[in-house]
Length: 356
Ligand code: COI
Image 1: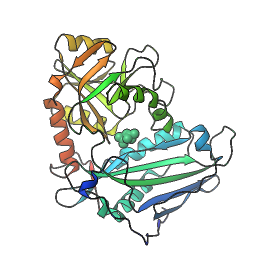
Image 2: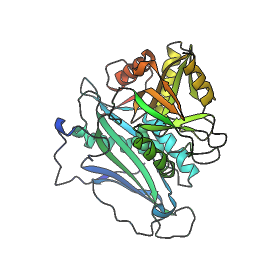
Image 3: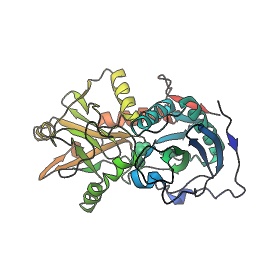
């Protein structure tokens, strides 16, 4: 395994205070991890250096063709003071799945997990401890060849940033309002929907913008072919409680395989609940809402955690869910998941990794 060189800053920044409210993705810590890839040499020169601008040619390939992948994970300050990561191996495995789809050289997952632990250990004092806060970790890889022919990059950089964060949605744990997107699509099978790549998020901006103008928090995407089956919300996977079944769209290539999604399914199963991964059409959902069988809806994601959905708009049809209040299953999942992440509940699944 390569060594990680460490160069600490001489100018540590003041850390945000409670009054700064920790708006998501706004504050960055003092250091970042950087590692380069050059054809013939592989991944090399792993280092932790002061956070700051990077030099990039205006011809850098990532700027033109979007060869860019990322991950989202968090470090938590447990109630007993320990620092915990949540299933970092799953993030690194997913990063390699995205790498593979985008012709990015694979990373050594174990080594990158160690790099994350080392960076988080150096940035320990940046991890907030107030209820609902954490240190968001953003690993990403971009192709940087100064060349505007279209082909996979031969030179890339892998960077990890950290930012102390509070809730992703201003609503916090209060149910969000979601708009079912009818015109635009995010991804299709055979495309890149299952990866965490910049282009998927670029594809979502127009719809997101239109939803916000109508006072909705996000959009719910339907499949790109029939515009019929529910896929995901831009920053989270979705679950619906219909009668005695908890349904989430099956992974079929155009949906992000969320780690919070996977953990929620595992938790629900461990409670003996009837959770099913299958196709679910928007007509089935609307019908369930009309006849009173749609009891709860919620999203899952690293940034979003468990986010109840209180209101869905599909064309002229409005679905008000659980009187716009958080339901018992969403609440139990939120309490258990965050209980494990913040070390309040014993981690019987072995999901957390302590950072020393
Ligand atoms: C995450 O939940 O970590 C994400 O990557 C969603 C986001 C784009 C903020």
